[in-house]
Amino acid sequence: MVEKEGYLQKAKIADGGKKLRKNWSTSWIVLSSRKIEFYKESKQQALSNMKTGHKPESVDLCGAYIEWAKEKSSRKNVFQITTVSGNEFLLQSDIDFIILDWFNAIKNAIDRLPKDPSSPSRNLELFKIQRSSSTELLSHYDSDIKEQKPENRKSLMFRLHHSASDTSDKNRVKSRLKKFITRRPSLKTLQEKGLIKDQIFGSHLHTVCERENSTVPRFVKQCIEAVEKRGLDVDGIYRVSGNLATIQKLRFIVNQEEKLNLDDSQWEDIHVVTGALKMFFRELPEPLFPYSFFERFVEAIKKQDNNTRIETIKSLVQKLPPPNRDTMKVLFGHLTKIVAEASKNLMSTQSLGIVFGPTLLRAENETGNMAVHMVYQNQIAELMLSEYSKIFGSEED
Image (cartoon, rainbow, N blue to C red):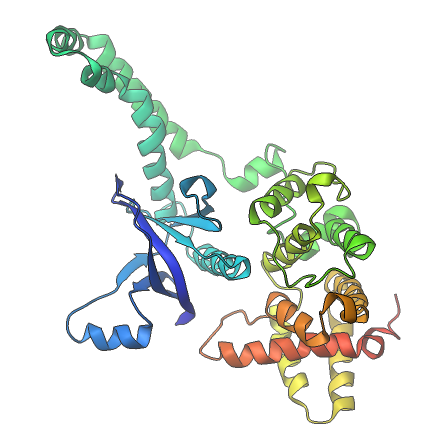
């Protein structure tokens, strides 16, 4: 089942653990439930070429690892996928929202795959540790040999060969590494012991709200306050992307529960704040409009009579869990203020619907109806904005 497809820049930098020279090329990327396929042209053209024996490069996502890789390239918006077999790929796009959507789509696909102790993800961790820690700890003498002059190499080899203690140290370190890997505590255990703090980004909305004893996350309210203070009349607010590295820095600070001051000069670019707010909603494991409500909202927006459409959606909103309903009310109330300044910021109801529709509302299992769903997603977000007072106005707080 195809979940997402489109053009990205791709570079393969490792094959089975062996480093490769980085060579960027444009590829048509096709993401399915457990793999990615790379084509040199669109899938339709590629399928016709496959009849002649050309097969696409395929990447198994089971146990794979995805991370941002700013240090791996001078290009912006680069992330890396590492597979259990030791293959490494860099993917990149100059357009911020495109690369963010791809990152989250692939991450969600990986997260849905099995993660039991015998799964490939454990093998990947073992592979990475073997490549880094154990290699560094156990192979210092190998590098020493290579750096020695020829006349000294024989004597060094002789000493190493006859050194029982070196062999025993090497075996001891290997044994300890294996024990560490098998006895390593789970993420849940580390969180329970307070060694790893609970995250804001990537956590369920109700979890964040329960932790903060509220129904609207503190970070959401802080971002909205900052935007309303200095961003209502900014051209392209919420449409223009902020610097991705700065957004990631803000994300890190929020996740570390450090005191956040959005008036600080490092967050001077309001597009960084709006980018972080969109990222927060995009990374929710379940979107602001819960999966169980998706089809009901779609059916509501399909209704021909406008009053019936509004009343149906109002009824659905009132049935939402309090964190979803209250956060939705605060967010769309804020966006109505953005629309009120459309003559200055050039952000209409339709523009904001395009930006927020797919972020706030999506099906749990996307099918071939993605294009159709996107139309409904945008329309639902637009209606929530244009009829805000009717949908939320008479709600009891």
